[in-house]
Image (cartoon, rainbow, N blue to C red):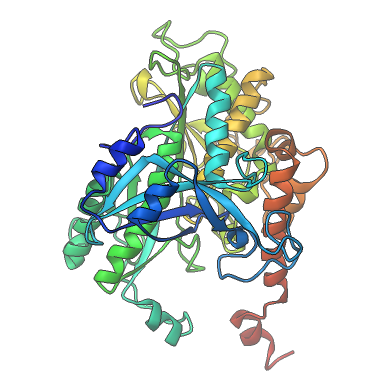
Length: 485
């Protein structure tokens, strides 16, 4: 285990160890991650894989030149375009990610990261490289980035073929009704429900909790806390696992943020903290049982000064990194209802508050070692590498600049309705278009912490998404206007 990641069990540390591990295999499955969080990969013969284990291999750059449906971006971007002939980028195998896929004949599996084939530097748009770089920046200060992710997701009695035939309408939920934390509903599809948990453990994705959530066919799975890069790997691979197990049972799990207009959406709540080299939680305040005397507010008295600065950094930059938290058109509809739908739509924070954008989890609710922030803005459609990169870069900016909290906690407004309209409450962008404009503006906090190369590329991909949406004619429009307009 290094300061930025936790290797999987039995991961090889050398090519020779790798040869031993693969001596009885004929093929290996590899995958990298695109900006939408989609796994892009293939099988490789063991001989080809071993030959590439040290230096890497060529991988078509088009995965950074098209969207999640393989449509080339309307505005060509720097990495992959007609001018450079959609050249290869360099894929390097991360031996520390070794797993075997239990539902696929125990096939060996590795993740790759992408590099520029000329400079050999990490590709600026590669989400996995971005998060590793983020963790390495924190490590320079003696910090280890720790994280956990919770997914809520609808499940349907459907297949890819059936939803296409139905044109994605009139879908059948796996179970009826609103039954959060139900022990009965899981027994209706017990094999599927249990396999999600059991196969995760075999696939080296530790699960902390697994239960029904409110909504027809909704499940929630909390992935166990670990190093941030390992957490992002686990999070993106859990989606792959859930969809694979679902196919086996004729179930289609969906991590879309808001499939139904009249029901709560699906979150990707993200928990974060920092540790020092000895493993101590840097957000925890332990010097006095009564809390920190110089805390900005009562809600933060059990946070360290570093924790408070980290929180201030996240809140200060949150409106300008929203496309990383909410990367889809649909995701902003999850936020429309605000706290009434358990989804925050303003820059808020509070002690143990599920109504806030950032929930402070600290004593007395938990022991000091468990002190952390739960960032509740992302939906289940998030790319975990981008979300975690944004949170930690903003938080580190708060620490290095010594930022202070400039607004009181959410309880101030909830307990005193006369203050709810105060100008200091900053609302989050309400659409991907607005969010992307704010992120891409000159001098944005996003450009400050990520640099122009990444923001120009990722922003260009979101502009493409907005253009497709603006050109689309929806069922709602036809039903509303066709007869009466």
